[in-house]
Length: 446
Image 1 (spheres, rainbow, N blue to C red):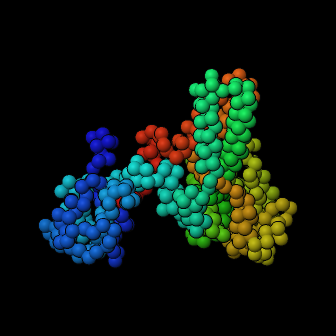
Image 2 (image 1 turned 90 degrees about the vertical axis):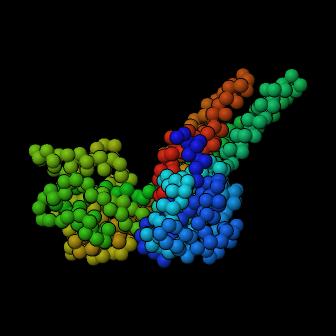
Image 3 (image 1 turned 180 degrees about the vertical axis):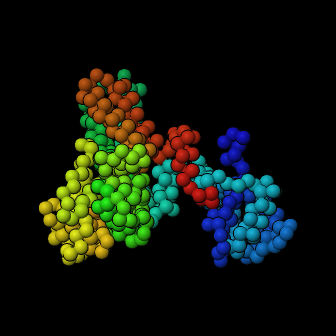
């Protein structure tokens, strides 16, 4: 069945988590869903009003609440019915089975939001923001997602307007140049177009520069713990997380693979990776694989925490391209805890801690927090970043061509490329693979 036909289907899914609860939500969408659901209700659905009703199946009846939203005034832009039965999965499964046997089908992951996108209720960036809202683990992430969903960042909107105005002016000159005073109009137009290009470049550059900060805010600040065997990396991981995530023993080389965990500090998410000890003298094949993975984790981290042991002179050899490293001296069991003032805990450039006794763990967290980039814009994933870079590159080329003043045809083509990149951000011309990749992040009932 092709996608066009599937988009015309009536779809149904549980919109709340599967399991026991006081109330559940079953969502039904598509042309004809009102008539389908009404077949099983004691009273017809009311538009925009949640009312008590009774749903009858072959095996049981259920007292519930029900409401109808008429197209286009619904989440998906289609007719939508929402049922609010008791949160008993026997009841919910029975209702959904009844509707499927009568002509509906189970919704795919994110299909309700995908239909909202296809019907112009949300754009692709809003859809991605909505997925991030659902996945948010901190209030900061939630606020960031809501701000993007509500259009709180105006830079991309401004660029789209500037480019559209510049393109319209150029098209007018290209079509009606015989009727205009060429030199006079060209000078005015060049100034306007160059102004639009400069302003657009400035706005897009800010978004590109803010990408790393936005991605970190959304996904978390990635930390890799690197060091020689038995310096206490796994103990430090557990201390940062506040639980026994990694196995800790006195035996060197206990950690053979990477171990990940998350913690929240100052409303910011951090993802920590414990790694195998950097034992350069090992001949153990498995340990060598673990070391390779440790180096890979370090290369992918936002910051590398190099852990050494108090009283020892280990030298950590990191790849030359890793510059984002800080140094920690562990097993400093006799030092005093300094709270958040990590400068007081430093000696010879190393932050002194005791992971085992929890000394200066807060200072380390504060240091990591201060290293997080705080500037961010609207773009926060690689799809959006690629669109922004394409737009910027086209604007740079358009700026060069506009200075040559040899005609507007090439400038117009380059500005159109920049404009197309911005519209791709919002998904106006996105292909099915891109769209599917976005909505596969969602749960079934969203």
